[in-house]
Length: 273
Length: 308
Image 1 (cartoon, rainbow over the protein chains, first blue to last red):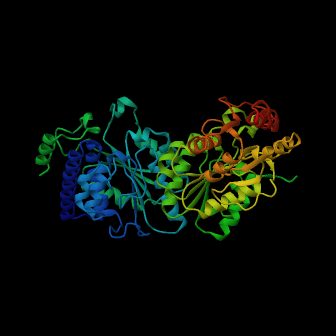
Image 2 (image 1 turned 180 degrees about the vertical axis):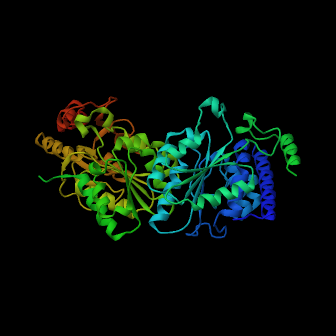
Image 3 (image 1 turned 90 degrees about the horizontal axis):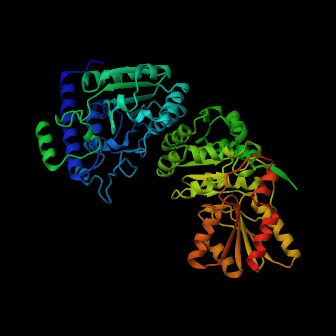
């Protein structure tokens, strides 16, 4: 599918707006995870505004495509996208992590548009697998998308799920790996290396697509390619930059789990104008 | 006396429910011949998924299925369901409050020769510390069926604990109601509250005690949550103390549940007949029950110290 320049431009603008919301929410909340939210912004913005079949007015529409955020700590991204799509009013975003908020520190079913909780890493691929099996049993054509973190796939549960998804030929399942190269204790390659990653997924029976996770054109064609794969699941291994879009957050491990201060947020928002 | 496998009845009940309800899905992790989910797999292959030796994936996958409207029965040995996949149960199954029924077999010390690694003696505790999950420990095979049907008919997550051995059927239990204990006999001297295979032993102990002129109330506490506090307090008031019998560690299971209730509202003596701060080991079930003080005689001894 040819993606027009105007569509690409629109998505890039949308992604910028989502990044702005992420910074604003986190600065207000005073805690949370900007780095991985910003690195996955382009990937999941493209998904929500160009790929996903969903209806924000009817979050439980049975025919909807499913999305699950397995790396739950990056929920500011999810919340921004859900709000921007119309699942709940934008004002809610500024209640992130507060007592009584719809928006918990990690994803939770109380938030409209969220299918299942996450936060304890490594379980989301299995949850997506369950959704994929349900679609097959019910002979429904919805697709299932799940976002994984690179540190997250060090969890053994991920590889159990990877094995099972290929065993059960889950070609309606598309995983997206936000490969930003950093985790809490430092560079992924120093903490617990994942390479050769494409080969690992292929060896588990998956169709792997490697892309630049900040190039909208690449992102859209990767989603389209994944749709064409038959008899096996697909994974988009997206090379990204942690903290993408805010110069002083890019590749800075400290911003994995630290919210920007008021001053930092102002500076960041200027960069995102 | 009739001896039946609880898991045989479980398999049959799954098939019976599966016939009537198309949204039932069953999962297992390479133990479908032991847990008897294999019977369902044969009847409804398109609604059965084997995950191989991967319990964590199985429990989390159940969540995805349940989020799409399925009622999911998940089975493996109690040790691997509640131990290996505890985080998946806590954070994904129960926190989401999905319609997932964990029916685990081979619980307790009577697993026998396989030894400690396979003897789940802390599974009730592991499930009970998670908010809201309903817990049933059926005392015999017919009650395993009633438990599975009750779990199917009640929204939300369940843990049902089944054993490995053939067990005698406890007669005249009356109607099974989730969360309502069954008073099997009444006596004013003391109360014996039991679950699982210990219910039959409690009844035997009652007969022996009667010979000595001691009259015991015997209660089958098949539901650990929601716990029937009303019946516990009633007999705490009517009798001189409570003996709690469970094929489980005395920490965190039925005995703890009952102590928590009486400590607040009617402090009476509670003596636990259960496994005391030890791991299991290999052996024939009868030898193990003796070694771990889970016999009829152990219940009698505990009863006598209540009235002493």
